[in-house]
Image (tube, rainbow, N blue to C red; front, side, top):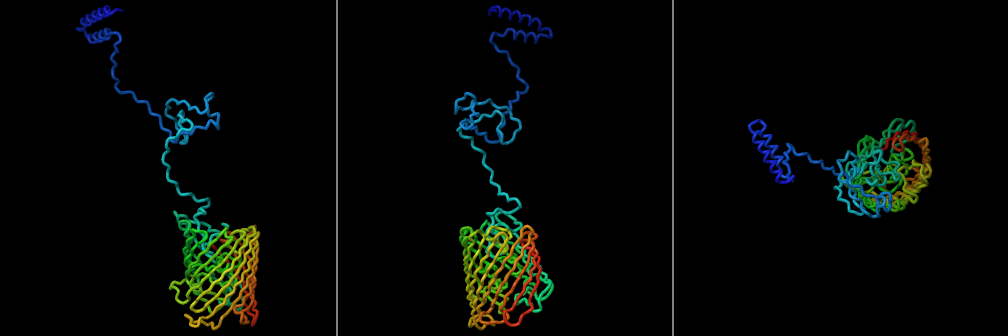
Length: 510
């Protein structure tokens, strides 16, 4: 249609609209005429919607870093058929909102970066949590630190006799120390005497030890222990058993300071609850110093193939009664009378570390431990020299122990305490012990022979030998066990004494 025809049509429409204005349809006619008369190419007016259309939801970001594409060189199936090697994958369309998926999975359709492209920076890592304890509640091995030889807190070299449980609090590791030894003596000779080293003086019951305390490690290299004897002496009074602090950061030099065992005799350095028989050898109880206050350093090389010990303690105080041995002095008042003692020991375990106990409870391959020690006590009452040597063998449940002890004491001309000794005294003791542990039935049998001469210059009834035979049943390893011993003592000179004894013991050792 031409422009002139269109204009004429518009004029006619307007005329009809004016004629219809008198009626109620005038407004509608005018609107229809306007739309009809719009020029070609003009856009009709669009009414505005009441509400704008909602925007398309944005795609959710993947919760994890995008998956790294597989290397096409190692996985040809990852490349698209016909695509050249190393070509980048074409970008995919914008993904729709993904459905719920595992956090580690990428959203469906997400574009992957080409091989070799740098990945976007990952979210900052959360701080590492503390390492979990191994099964059973045991502390990590690195958290444990060695205790001085002879301590009730000493860890087992082969892990077979460690604490039943431990408590870890941050950098602190704690374990209980409990040693309860209840004895029954159904038979004892009429001449048995405690000060002569006998187990009891009459039939009945005896509380041999009731020891309690705790041991721990701080930061993995600061071991410590505190324990007390609750039934010590004839009046069952309480006294300090051990209290020491160590620094074991370097394997070649562990330092220990406080009240602890003197590193001299193997049997004395073995814990009171770790023996094959109820009591330690009579010669060891009489001639080896036990717990004293001082410090010592020890080092171990090549898995204990060579070890050394060197220390300084308060001077050793001997009882006038030879079999009563050395006084265990807690030095609560300091070193008042006994000056200073010096100790050194060399040891070797060439076939591997020896366990804590005298018995071979682990039924292990052959192991050998040997050592030699020396001490000099520059005491205010006596000057004492001591020499000792020992060998312990373990093999397939069997054990054999040999120990030699030598003491020589000289009274001071001006003693700091009253003393009954007037001349030098030289003492000698020899111990031999064998035993076998049957792991299948938890039963061990042992026998020990010892020869003792308290004074080599005299021949009297104190010279003699002793034979002890016993059996032990282990309910729970070396933690809970029952023991039965028979001891026969024979005097070499003088009057024979009736001092044989039978002793039974139930022991809890944590």
